[in-house]
Structures are given as structure tokens and as C-alpha cells.
Length: 326
Image (cartoon, rainbow, N blue to C red; front, side, top):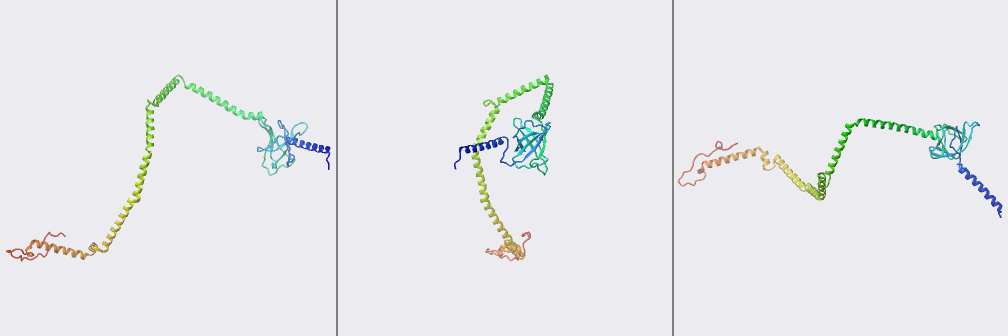
């Protein structure tokens, strides 16, 4: 089927007109493809507000102004129609006010209420008048100006007090103090001179000592490591052996003492058997008597004399006095 040129031109014209209408509405802030709800706000004045200006809630753009119309012929109020481009639940106790940025466009701000009931399509909400830009600037600047005036008064009072305090005598004292301070700084500067200043030389000596100490750091570290190694060896080697030997000696001594207490061995029998001790004591006394008798009467036991006669005295039967100490 052949389409004529007239049909093509007519279709192109219709499409162009449709795109023109859509673009015009888009520039006015309308979006025909988005679901919207139209609502109304009544103001006494709408200075600076234009069609397609933004509707904001908490700083977010949620719609735009569609149109403005007087409420009555006397122009006591102006009804502003706007549409929402988002699904927003606006409580019925909410209100709107017109605000203007210092260097930006004017827009309507909706302050959300706390009601559980929400506005519907075609409903109206309350409008609140807001001060103009000049009133806002005045509200911000008046406290600042008052603070500046108070600061100037405080500075003026302080200057007057300083002027009354610093009389000629105080000024002279202040000059002497500054001169003394200048002399002190000069003396300190001389002390810090690298070639002649004693303080500078002391700092150089400290620096030299620090360098030497840094150089000796390796030697000090090696000595500490050797000491640690020696201590470790003593702790793990010789001391352990010594303690082991001492423990063995103590065990042997405990065994000997145990044997003595139980009567084992000669010492144990002497310590445990009283009769053995008595027999040993008696034998010692008899041997002592025999030695004393031999010393007093040797001829009785050894006869080596040719002309002497044999000793016929009685032998000792008990030790001589003070010869044995019990």
C-alpha cells in the first residue's frame, strides 16, 4: 500500500505538535507520564513564586506549582495549585510556606504534621506567611550588630582602663623591664654562640657524649648478651648439678640417721643397745687397770733381771684414783 506524501506530512505534524506540548508541560514542571495528586494551598501573598517552582518536603523536591489564581475579586487570598510527583502521605495538619533562597529561586516548603489522616487528591492544606528576604536578613543581622556594638564598648572600656593604669611611672617600669629582657636575650644569644658560648659548648659536649654512647651501643649490647648467656648457663648447668649433688648427700645423710635410729651398724647398735655400751665401758676400764698395773709392776709381767727378784705384790683389782673419768 502506497502512503501519500500528504499523509506523511500530516503524521509528522501531529507528532511534532504532541512533542511540543509535552516539552512545554515538562518545562512548566508537569510530567504527564507520572502519577500525580493535585492539591491546593492558600496564601495572602505569593511574591516571587512562579509556575513550575518546586514543592519541597525535608529538602526533597516532591512536586511543582501548577498554577495560581485569586480566591475572590478582592484578592484577599491567592490559591496555589500544585501536583505531587511522588507517592507522599501528607498529614491533614501539615502546613506550607513560601521560602526564597538569597540567590536562588522561590519554592514552597511543606512542614509535615503528626496526624494519622492524610490529604487526598483535590484537598487543601493551610498556608503560613513567611517573612521576606529583608526581614530574614534583618533577623540574622540584628543580633550580630548588637554583639559587635557590645564588643566595641568593651574594647573602648579596656583601652580607657589600660590608659589609666599605664601612667608615667608604670610606663618607665615597663620600659626598664623590656630593656632588661632585651639584655637577657642578648646574653642568652652570646651563650649560644658556637665558638665562645659556654652553653653552646656544653650542648656540643652533650652531643659528642651522645655520639660516643651510640657508638658504644654495640659493645654494651654484647656485654649484656654475654652476661645473660653466663647467667643462663649457670642457672641451667652448674647450679643444677650442685643442687643435685647436695640433694643426693642429704638423702645419704637421712639414710645414715635412719639406720642409726633403727640400730643398724656399729653406731646404730651403740646408740640403741645399752648393754653393749656397758660392756664396752667395762672392757675399757679393765684395759685401763691392766695398763696401770703394767706400768706400776712391770716385773710381774716381764722378768729380764738376772739378779733381781720377782715382784710378788698383789695385782690391781680396780683403777687407781683419778685415772678414769666417767
